[in-house]
Image: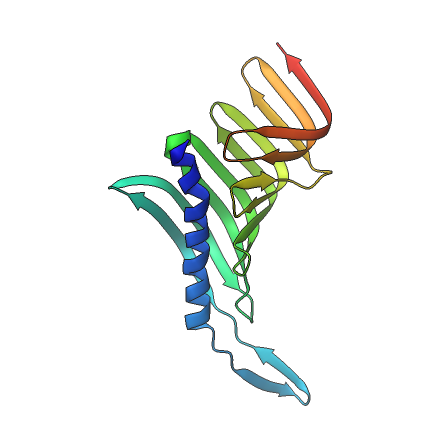
Amino acid sequence: MARSRKFLPALVLMGAALSAFAVNHKTGETVQTVPHKQAEYSSSLSDIKVLNIVDSRTLWSATSKKAVFSGDGGTASLSDVAINIPSENARLTASGGQYNLDSNTLSLAGTIKSQVQGFDVKTSSLQIVPGGKLNTGSNDVVLLQKKGVRIEGQGLEADQKKNVRLDRHVKAIFY
């Protein structure tokens, strides 16, 4: 349990690092392109890898092909995101996402796949919020599957205590 509690606060540190980069590297300048219209410069990073190491042990790692920061530095659009948590035997991948640097919230979208403790998890959106909660949209279909069991429902919520709840239309097939 203690190991999993360090994951999300560390993810918040990743956000803080991205936030510091955005603040230090955004120009804040505007360029006159057309009378009464202004364009802002934006910053980006490519091939990002963030490691959270404590006592020479990697608690989690995260990679992203690209992060493009908004003009105001408040958000970063991510592509090809992967998060590994070795202590939990967990891996999460997403085709894209949005990191809100102000609220330290990571919203993943597109094709999201996760492997957690033997379960394959598939959904189309997932939000990781400070305090250790994971959730999908209330109408998002979630599929949890491993050998011998398939669970499908809508609206997933999970916390650091490993409590997982599907809100509605839950079906379980045991084979």
